[in-house]
Length: 340
Ligand code: HH2
Image (cartoon, rainbow, N blue to C red):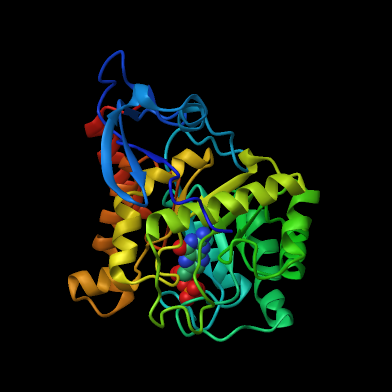
């Protein structure tokens, strides 16, 4: 669906300071505020305006508290620990194979401050080959069964396939995290809507095998926004309410380094969708390119830096490999900003 060229987009200029006065609006029920916005248009340079210039429906979407997801309140950033039970994930591949290893890793993440754990059985790194459904199920099912019984925090499943999602939910998963934004398997969106399941819809351009071959956008930030806007509207039509939908700009999925940085710089735009935002930048390749660090597990500091900037923009879910480091950084950031 082509977006009208003259559409206005509104990005809150978020402030992590103590409430700056009468004109400041509270962002999405959090302790963050904004009193200015950036108006974005495809055919004009960005313009900074007072928050009072917001159309009422956008103002409502930006300020309305987000409903809890899987029992987690979203008035502060939540840490989603990554648990890939795959042999080939780009950073933790081969580390958590078998339920015993996975359970140990999940338990450590929770002890270190993870609010939820995301279990994946298919790598979607650039160049990854698709995994047969039976293999994906054989990886995630025993893992989810084992960890939901043990860890006491919610579990999501990272899958693009309805039959994998069904098995994961029966095993105890409470949210579907789909890197294709529920476009890969036509059955999955209806399944989530019928079962009133929270979903994370992520933007991706192309499939994992080809997505890094020269990705192109008219305007990456606005194109990703339009995609997510259209997907949220589609899910609402199917009967899934907006407060069950988490949106994700899809860092590294069909994006150059410049595209990733543009999305991270303006990530607060996505609050205008009225949904919680998730960002997964942990250890990704652009951090290696910026810092010259080749090995993904050594990109911890760069990843924590991204998480902290995202928290300052009001992002509600941070999908990370390095849970204790992220937790420590967020605790110090929140204390300095005087956030409750
Ligand atoms: N990134 C990856 C996988 N799933 N889900 C969401 N919502 N957002 C992301 O950015 C995201 C995701 C890729 O990272 P990882 O799981 O660490 O690696 P791999 O795909 O190789 O298993």
